[in-house]
Length: 139
Ligand code: 5GP
Ligand code: ZN
Image 1 (tube, rainbow, N blue to C red):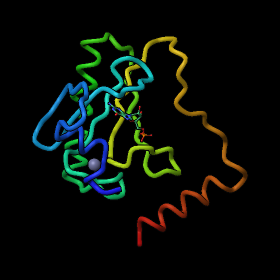
Image 2 (cartoon, rainbow, N blue to C red; image 1 turned 60 degrees about the vertical axis):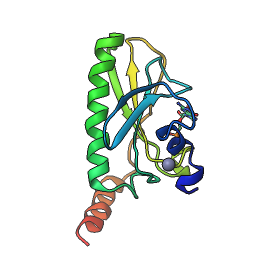
Image 3 (cartoon, protein in one colour; image 1 turned 45 degrees about the vertical axis):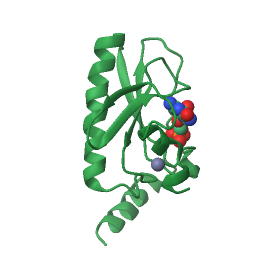
């Protein structure tokens, strides 16, 4: 998908309506239409990029800065007990809209949402996994 037929690019140029809660030169934030809890907000770079692999560092920094601004606003406005940040990158991770976006999710004590369940490493896998990642970083 390119920027011309991207849903979130259309929200940026107001071609599609959204509950926009924050905007600056580089970033737009608006309510997710299908929230985990009310107030669940999507923070996007205005400039189209698909995901964390494609977004440049300046845009990424602007998105993360705005995510923190939104976190404070959700705490004040909704008396949230906590915040989860989430980002799905590529279909294999459940991404559905291919314009990079960070989910800022208000959480409340006792709400039933479970973001992820951990599972222990198999024998030998812990150190081997660390080795692979360190090798990739040292390339
Ligand atoms: P993801 O790509 O992170 O898996 O999911 C995309 C998110 O965008 C979903 O949480 C979905 O509810 C939200 N979404 C999809 N279409 C629209 C839309 O037209 N407007 C808004 N505000 N959110 C949308
Ligand atoms: Zn886009």
